[in-house]
Image (cartoon, rainbow, N blue to C red; front, side, top):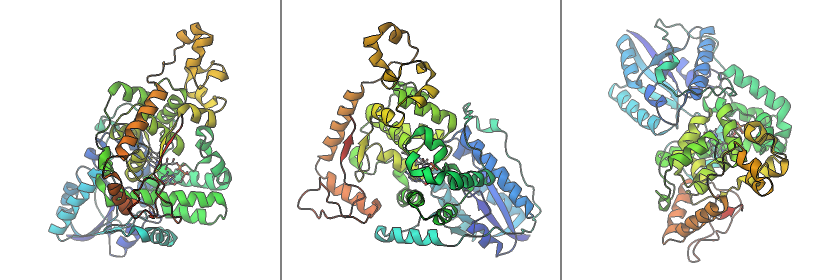
Length: 501
Ligand SMILES: Cc1cc2nc3c(=O)[nH]c(=O)nc-3n(C[C@H](O)[C@H](O)[C@H](O)COP(=O)(O)OP(=O)(O)OC[C@H]3O[C@@H](n4cnc5c(N)ncnc54)[C@H](O)[C@@H]3O)c2cc1C
């Protein structure tokens, strides 16, 4: 039997700056392998739009590898079964891959693979995909370690790979997954080539307006990098973007670099505690909310009766991407005003994002639902957000055609029309608000505040902070910490409830 190493591609679909690939080639012939795992794709956080993006990226990778001698080998099934099958034809010396901090499914799958490899005495070598570290993490030194890793040089792509004789395998047809129909016509196309084009466009034309336009749903569509799906699927490496940003010395590139660092900061939390995908950071928030299918579906379809929420959701449904502030607002609305468990609304959102990245996603879902206990809690007011970021209602009119001819004065609050023209209001095809915004905001605030006053709340919060909190430079006194506790902690943010009424 021929000796080979398996280079297991996961969410690192590129040959440039691919440490696992570079290292594997130092030790003889390789089988570059991508495994399509049906069980993973059947999870409710995954969707057709993500699969299409992933498929385009796999095809692009197959092409790049083919050019240097060995096309990508594709298999469909369970990872261990595929490895077993290969081991019948080849002597597997080692498995090379990047570390993955994915969802709980991949966490458990990797444990099984580790056991399998150890039983077979096959070495599995893993390399850093991001600045996310395994084992016991000293949070006080995390930032330094992260910056050091970001500054490391990039791995150049190999010029040749020896061809190994093996069936290259087919990608299954789209029907195989039985996904719901999900056209997502406005999404970016996958693959490194498309990612590089987007990166070039952003750095050459948009970096200078990045900070100015970042919060507007309309302008950010062009002015934000929108590199997230390429980073998430690994078509482009995070380090690569960081190095590119380093070539510019202005506030915009600084801002971009800090976001790239957040990327790792958030994933680090899931790496340290994989259960955060479904378990609250602070246990006092466990099961405080109730599911409601009608509210969840109205929200998911952009039919809540709140124009800015609906416009953002419909835009996301069409494009598979929306900016940070709008994601936060959508999540806040679901968690505070609709009072739906973040696990439910978060799964719906995840499946809409072509950049779904579990470490960032579940952290953000919890942050925008007030369950971390170490962040500023903000209840967004969608009317205020709409007036601030879409003052003329252009974005609303584009995505909510039912309101196309509504006068500007009423575009953010169509229900106000009732007083002036009750017939027009009654005849409007646009949904009437599904909840009372003011009342639900007040109730949510009260419920969250009551929880923070429960005995022992701050002791647990401190533990959460020590494990997961970012050590920012300034010392902030924590307002709500009991006096006799050591309150001079450097906290990620002062814990408080910001409310927009
Ligand atoms: C509820 C919610 C869910 C989210 N889910 C995801 C997700 O599944 N995948 C994802 O990549 N981002 C997620 N984010 C973070 C953020 O909204 C996106 O990273 C960002 O909008 C992507 O657009 P961009 O590439 O143009 O970002 P840019 O502003 O151009 O930033 C460049 C890169 O920095 C990183 N980044 C930017 N903002 C953040 C942030 N707030 N936290 C962590 N990293 C950041 C991303 O890698 C991004 O591609 C979520 C935010 C919220 C509020």
